Length: 621
Image 1 (spheres, one colour):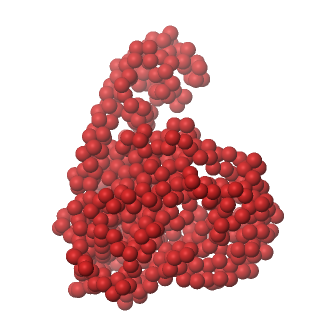
Image 2 (tube, rainbow, N blue to C red):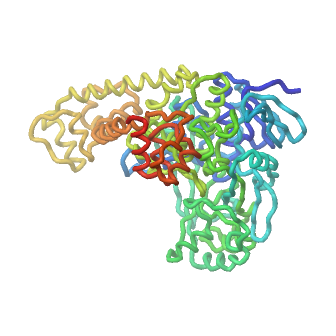
Image 3 (tube, rainbow, N blue to C red):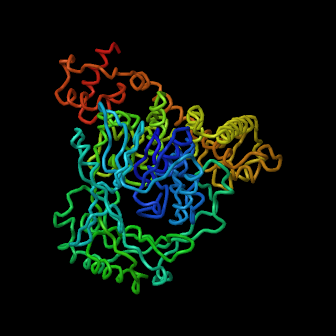
């Protein structure tokens, strides 16, 4: 019934879809195994993609030839560029998405690739001499493969909690997955538990929107994909709305704490610190009189609403009573209650940089099995693991992104070196080179790498090269334009900037924070049209590079200074026992994690600078 495969992907969430697409597009024979063919690429929690740091990740996935950016743009119902009041390093694209359209678009794209599908569970792995040889399905099929990529999400021994009720499940209405954790523990893997939660879903017809604040999308939609934006963005956008909890709501929720699985000790897993439940919010921030809630539509053709900010596992009756005391929700009807889910994960210090496990050759993990939370974090791991599973079976070098090359590199480096004992979420603050890792330049950073692998298309490569050349031309034009005071002073005065008394180059004027290229072009340059013919994306990129040149150069200098440490490879067979001066903790961590480079060794939790110095001296550095 089954032929042999190069890569079998277990699970069809965001990580699994990216993994299957990447490996197949690189030429591997891929089987995607999912428990339910109707929930491929399901948005299990909020119907949105991107956000702070997460938007940067989606653009990196797109630049590398992944599909998340394209799918997000094709299913978008609203777009906003967050943090526009701050510097470009903080700008983060975010979209609201049509949940059903998102999933159907992903499935359609996968069906156009060389991916085989099978609906079943995976009960165990076939392993010979610590190397993956196949999988055994719930129906008893044994399928041979050269590599396996596990993207199990919240399904491994998942338990759903609603008040005092608890039952097995990987998602509401879907059964959990058993057997994999138990086998991996027998093989020597370390496992633990995490938890996450989701809000109730509401009937939009029962909401009084007049009593809420409206939140519209941006007029200008840049989207996520570096491909043709005009074809990938919606003709119309749907608004979101904002409302707030109040003291009455808080008192109602507090009365339910006695039946809360979190406060009664029925949940052992640690939840996401930066996406707390409503119970956590009113408990940890008792001084706050209200908390903001976002009323988010689930799609163009549905009345279902996602109440962002009201994640909860309290009893249904408590949830319902509290909801009906929120402004605008006085007559609300609930489609289904919020719930918490507890699941198994495997501390990611057990992985190599490629996301291959250290214990079992050709076994890869990606997504929530590694302790992360969020669609974007899962998708980028799936992409990298899918690429590297293909590379491994073809005896090719893995793709390993450095911390100065991508947020994806930061995420994976954090996971494998520091591990995580709570759901890991990406933030801009985690990246020390965030001026280099902007959402606007992900294509310039990553497309060529992916093109050399064979994943990014010729179209992507050509588009990136055209943009690169255009940016260079724009900067040259602005370098050669010299303004007389009477040509530009009226514009400078209109934006509150100091007038000039003598000739000045356009490129120097752009260094002023209150001068921007778009306005300068409309007010002054448009008369002679020196910038006509350039796309807005290239104009924006040129302006960012001009304005932040000094900051970019500083970070680039720092990268160069650190490169000696970052690029010094530690042999896999290195014997740390010979370094008698190492601290006991450093010795233990080095032996367990087996860092690939000195830079990686320096970031391991519990390792001191003196330990790294000892290692450097021993290696002749």
